[in-house]
Length: 228
View 1 (cartoon, helix red, strand yellow):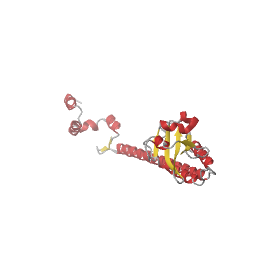
View 2: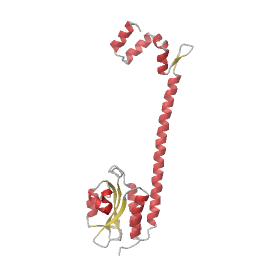
View 3: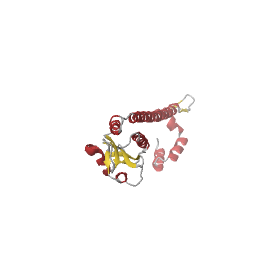
View 4: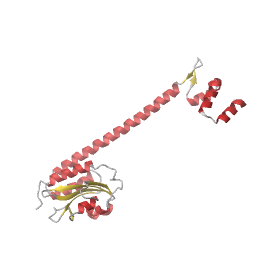
């Protein structure tokens, strides 16, 4: 490169338009520099034509890798969804097989720990009438207090007012998924709660659809037997 060419680049500060003009005015600069052509993935054919084959192939390969990665992510999400649905179906069968209220509460806790890897699962019922064995006991109005608002159907995340639901495992619980239930006629307020040791196990941004579905199953199953 001579002095005039160097001054051109210095003055233009490598602006794309200046580089384009320079290469148009000095085509031999690129054609005669095999090292630069190699770095750019280009080559000159016998007809003195720049061949973009390697560069084009590189772009196609990169696009293929992106597509493969996206396809892999979609497949992983699909597998995770399928696994979650299978776990939910298994949980429903476990709950429907309950023999009484006490067994139902035991199964809720068991599926929470064994199927979902959580710390605990709890069914709790507001008084003042009798509460089934194995169920948490709540005072009247406590469901509203725990969920944070009257008639709010569910709550995801950490709720300090809900830690007492988990008894001697309360200190292990750092996030919860909770759903309001209504039992028998006249209706009594109840709560299905799952606790996780992971602060990110349940967060307010998560949807509560699956937990709500399980709560409806618990409701219908519990109504098989009266509270004596």
